[in-house]
Amino acid sequence: MGKLFVSLYAYIIISIFILSGALEKLWPEPNGIDALPLAPQVTESLSQLAKTANGITKLKDIYQNEVISSDLVAFLPEQTADLKQGLAVPVFDGPQQVIWYLRVNDKELLKIGPYRFDVNSYDSVWPFFIMLLVIGLPVAAWSYWLWRDFNQLEKACHNISAPEDLQISGDDKSALLPIKQTLMAMKARIKHLLDSQRELTSSVSHEFRTPLARLKFAIAMLEQTQSDDKSKPYFDGMQSDIQELESLVSEMLEFAKLEREKPQLNIELYDVVAQTQHFVQKLGFNHATAIKIEANTAIELNADPHFIGRAIQNFIGNALKYAEQQVIVTLTQTSNTIFIKVADDGPGIEQSEWENVFKPFTRLDKSRNKKIKGFGLGLAIVQKIINWHEGECYLESGPLKGACFVIALPKKP
Image (cartoon, rainbow, N blue to C red; front, side):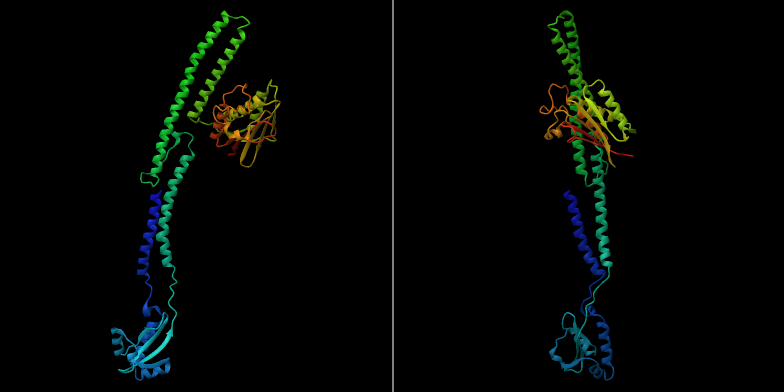
């Protein structure tokens, strides 16, 4: 980046120096007698009049004058030559004041003046316009070129949902080439680490299934040989533990699959209120906890019904685990956003832990009952789905004393 700004400042400074010299040549600042308006014409007129018969006498009658000794004024050689030829010689007597001298005889001079003049003020806009073009246009081109590269970089980074999505176009002469090279190196490193982590997760999950199957078979065989009432609770406990391990393996494989790549979303316009009512009826069937849905009108959402439905089911199922008597599902919309809120009257979650609930394998011991089964992957999957739809999921204070989970999805045509 330093190279970019050094090049810009160097260009501006060099341009100013070059323009200063060029403008001085094209529009030189008048100096000497030329700096006074009509002074050359007055000098010529005085010279011509002095050469006529009785010219000096006429000049005395017309202009403010004084006859002085020629020894009182020192002239340059070329001015002395002009005086001998009978020409008027202008001499400055101040920044904007001039006196003309004419030769009367060998010892006397006619002093005409002094006269004050206003210095020419150059009011043309062309020098400033040229300076603007010479400096402004290249700086604008330089800025556009830099903005274009930064815009490509921003879009590439903004659209990343996985390291393999990072594609940065541009030529090798781009000023952002070092940044691009760093990002591509970082992409390769992150991809390698994620691939290693996913491969490990998948391998471990698959390897779990073989010993679990053997354990299930061994327990089934033991149940046939030792089926007394005393050993039955132990067998049931072992079967429950094995089922829990199998559920963990399945959820880990599903989460690893969602982490590995973003699926193709089948976006369509549908009524999310009707979809939510279906899940409420399905999950609330034969459940002691009452589920109430609040939605005034139908709300049309442009999204993937399968994945959004899965996110809503996860939120409702999670609320049913911890609710004591009631769960409220609220659907509202604004001009730009659709909100789906699921609140329960359970023990709730401390506000300091709100940012951690969507992390994989997170169990909040202080706010949730440890006896309730779960692996902390359901909410992480919800966040992944909502991120695919460019939305947000978070917690807020709800109408009940427990937790209130929120899904905020943008309204799209």
